[in-house]
Image (cartoon, rainbow, N blue to C red; front, side):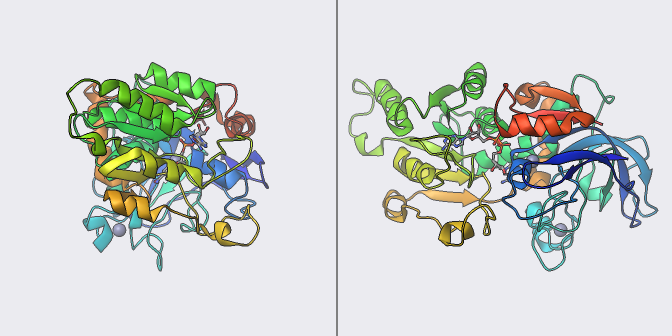
Length: 393
Ligand SMILES: NC(=O)c1ccc[n+]([C@@H]2O[C@H](COP(=O)([O-])OP(=O)(O)OC[C@H]3O[C@@H](n4cnc5c(N)ncnc54)[C@H](O)[C@@H]3O)[C@@H](O)[C@H]2O)c1
Ligand SMILES: [Zn+2]
Ligand SMILES: [Zn+2]
C-alpha cells in the first residue's frame, strides 16, 4: 500500500509501505477513503517532536471496513466508519469516565494513544490506504451514506478536528449568549467557533494574521481580528465597549471582558511583533487580560513537555510564564488537554446528518494521496489558502 512517511525535518514522501493487517481478534482493517492533514502533523513535520524518520504519519481517517477480527461484534465488512485520533479501549477507568484520550489500555504504562504520533504508542499513521483499527467495537463510529457522498468531508472532520473544536468550547464552558475569543483560525479554531455557535454563543472573535484564514472566519459569521493590525486585546475591547453604551451595564463595569477564551494555536504561536518568529508567551497573557472575572479559558492547542526545536532550557520543556495573579484575581477556570473524541463524536455525527452542522466548511483542498509532499509544504507555510487538506488514497 502507499503511505505518507516522514523523511526528516520538513520532508515527507509517499512510499510503498507494508500493508496494514489484522493483528488482534478485536481489530478491523479500514480501507481509507479520505484522510486529513492536521496542524498536529505540522508539529511533527517540523521536527519539533523529535526524529521520527520512517514513521507513517496521519490520524484522521474515514473509510470502509475491509476485514473484521474474529472477536468484533458490532462492526461488519462494508460498514462506513470514522475512527477517533485517540485510540481507546472503552472499558478502562478513564474510558468509562468519558476521558477516552487518556485511555489506560491502548498505550500500556501511559495515558493515551494515537495513530502516527510520537510517544503515543506504536500505532502506524492513517495517511495511507489501509489502517489497522484496534478495539474496533469501541473505535468505529458507523456512518450513513456512501463513500464520496455529500458528507465525506464532514465525516472526516469527525476523526479529530470537529470533536476537538467542540471539546474546546466545553473546556471554555461556552453557554448561551457568551462572548468567545478564539486565538488561531486554523481548522481547530474555526470549528471551535462553529461549536461555540452550537452552544448558543453571542459574539465570536477569531484572532489570526493569515488573510485567507481571517476571511474564512468572517465567512463563517465570526469577527476576524488581525493581530498584526493592532493589539488584539484592545481591538476586541473596543468592540465590546461599543456594545456597552447607555445604561444597560450600569454597575457592571468591573465585569468587563470576554466570557470564554480559547487558545487554538499551541506552543508554536507566532510573535505579535514579527509573525515570522515564534513567541509562545503572549497569547496566554492576552487571554488572561481579555477574559472577564468568572470567565473560562481553554487551551486546546498542543503544548509539549519536550520541544526538540528549541535549545535546552525551560521553554524546551514547556515551562512558560503564566499570569497566575491575574487569573487568580479574576477567578478564571482553565481547561486543557487532548480531546476526548468518543464523548462527542456520535452527537456531532447526528448534527451533521440532521443538517445542523457542516464542519467541511473548513476544508479548502482535496488532493490525491500522491500529492502529500506538496500539500504538507503549502499547509506548513499557511499559504495558497491551505487551511484543511483532505487526501484521497
Ligand atoms: N487538544 C487536542 O486534542 C488537539 C487536537 C487536534 C489539534 N490540536 C492542536 O490544535 C492546534 C491548532 O491546530 P490546526 O489544525 O488548527 O493548526 P493550524 O496550524 O492550521 O492553525 C493554527 C493557526 O494559528 C495561527 N496563529 C499562530 N500564532 C498565532 C497567534 N499568536 N495569535 C493568533 N493566531 C496565531 C496560525 O496562523 C494558524 O492559522 C495545533 O497545536 C494542534 O496540534 C489539538
Ligand atoms: Zn488532528
Ligand atoms: Zn480505555
